[in-house]
Length: 308
Length: 269
Ligand SMILES: Nc1ncnc2c1ncn2[C@@H]1O[C@H](COP(=O)(O)OP(=O)(O)O)[C@@H](O)[C@H]1O
Ligand SMILES: [Mg+2]
Image (cartoon, rainbow over all chains, first blue to last red; front, side, top):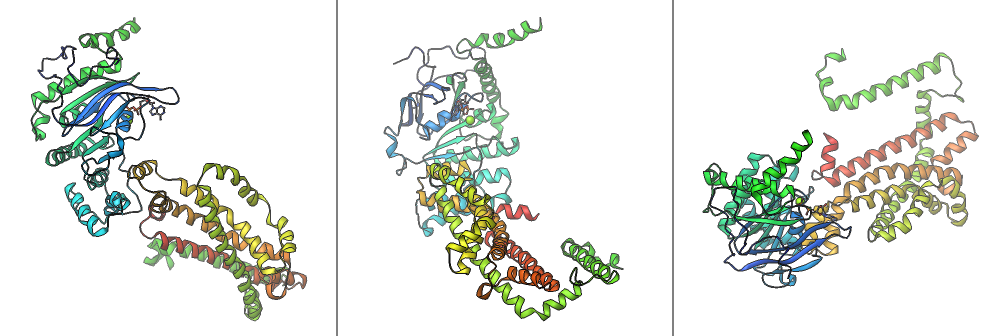
């Protein structure tokens, strides 16, 4: 295997922990739970030659809330789509529940993708939209209707089943989209910047609700964001990615107890994690893996040179 | 005075009233000019004379109108059915669409007056010949609009359907058809007017009397006989039929799309 060139990931990393920060946080951990998804040296080169991802190794354990964080173009969506089996890796492979993709969709192995847009059918009311996965699976209405009601209640849209998408705010549309994901009783939720288009207050509220859901239902979530604060608030582990070529730069374990609430957002620990991730992101956009104590210096120097 | 009535502040009322007022003003001016300058009725008849002719020749003109409408509706129906079928075939594969779309365009750009004589020679019965001509005129908007609509599916929704392992049939019925509906009705609106035009043009070319004597035939005859008031009366019936057809289509699409389709609501407000 090509251990020399692969980015430091999941298992026992030999790199020094983020030295720039004093927060005693970075500790690579092996997910103790059973693996839900294993990405095994999977890389992606698109037919047009774009090297979207260098070989990636990542294990998503049962019950984890993992966030992919990185600048745009670093291959977050590509990685998520590979996990969703929407695209194939050009090298390497993936395993789902320790098996191939054929078993995905069976009871206990349901995988659901939530898009950035709510992608609701504008001609159908909210209840019909939420019922779609069940309708496509030809679940009879007597069984599907109570599940739809329950899913709508869970996301706080219990009164809005007969409304049409255009009658809802952006945040409520996103809630409907999540209800549609939940109605299928997923075991693994893949979310690609689901709240990226929303204002910060709405996003914070949805984040809190999502986290509560994850906690209560023991879901496994793989979440993409470019918001540091969202990543810290939600995750058990943050995977920081860098671009050109897309790769995993570092992983940061957010070792804070659940359930978390708004008081976590203003805590010392939160600020420490945020600062650490901020530094890693500077490094990531600098395109220089490794020695992060120099990262700020390095990024500043070209500017200094230019002004002279 | 009119300005005092609160009805004038009702936008719906104003929307109907203002074109009506313009129409009445135009008719009055027309009537006044014709009377003042004593224009002979074989040049420009007055509106009142046209109305009188319409009443006097009602039996003749009304049966002609029925025939023209029969051709129009048959052609419109055929265009809607065949056009939709063709669109469904087109979206099955890009290859089919690329290979056949140019011929649909060919049909569209060829003036019906140029092909009508051929069709009338080939098809012995006048009625089917007229219907075929009018169908050729009316079919293109339905094909192009419906094809566009079936293809305009939101890519995110398409992904969602595919990830839920939706069958091709489910994708068609639950996703492509609802997406295409507003486009289809847009096509119907254009096509209904074209069907009438096609019917009238074909009648002109065919010039047949007897069982297929439509309004165009009456116009031709009235022209030969220099019966200009009747010509105007027939012309007026065609116009009224065209407007009625258009309104019918607007109502139909409103009814069919109901309250649930976005584009209808947006267009309204
Ligand atoms: N279908 C595609 N064909 C070619 N290049 C692609 C395709 N999809 C994404 N890319 C490229 O791959 C890289 C990673 O894209 P993406 O995964 O969308 O990044 P992110 O989600 O982190 O912003 C980008 O440079 C992008 O331009
Ligand atoms: Mg992306």
